[in-house]
Image (tube, rainbow, N blue to C red; front, side, top):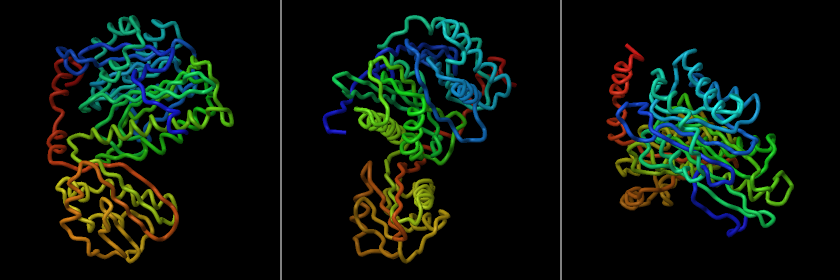
Length: 418
């Protein structure tokens, strides 16, 4: 893609032509709360659709229902909520997710199987449908292309800010837009992380081609991030393409490569937004592994370092402790030879051949005080590489995640649990 062929624009998930949205407050977590917590994104035209979901063996009801609907065809609407994950809620939870889709479908005049549902929040609590169901008809009215930001606000949980990314490219003199919103800040680990990402484009793309580029894009973005090493039950990426731009794209056609690059940009930008907004983190760290015998082994090393509590704690303290890094390399399960391992910290050589370099420790310490830095690991045993984006681990993260009792207490007051 040429440098000037893609531009970042506003509008979030409704930036693309033919997509409208709405969001409102249901008090899902607390009845008296006024923050937005229920959202809807709708394509005014039929779409082709694709998606990826958590690989956790424990899957939320919304994931099960959305996967089923996507297998049956394409979706035109997505209803999403924060405050409750609708996970580990049994057959009743699945019935609730299906009911949400059915009500939306009736209001919009589409099939229930054309509606996907996404939920995020506390695991194990029944959805407070007595507050949600009466509001869905209102949610389906007053839809507007100007409410993309409201959707981004409605789906966040422990996030400190909304996460939006939208771009525009031009093909044959016609603009094509890709818009998105996403959430995620904690319980983040590769294999879809703990996140919801909704992406809409007005390009026309066949399902088979959309599936290919979406799955490849996820593998190189959302599957390359970790904050705390925990994988959620609700991870979802959904992509809808409605063709409203009037431009049909396919491999080998003009504009295809630019479109793929633009979609990859949106996914990578959102993946990085998640890591940068990690729960109580102070560092954004890129871990690059090269010289591995296989791609799988490069991945094992990168994830071993990126998930290590010892390594992440040292980053939080501004301590350039390469010893903790190489110990994580050693237990990662990859084939490594200690005497071949080289490690650079923030561009400075810290380890060569498995031993300390003569780089002054004060220089290394100064580099890791920065908000962002890179760790480069060369195994010198092959040609394969892997990159992952991660964070430090702070005392504040532990404090923040110590208790969710207040949510369970509210559910008890609602008569949803004992």
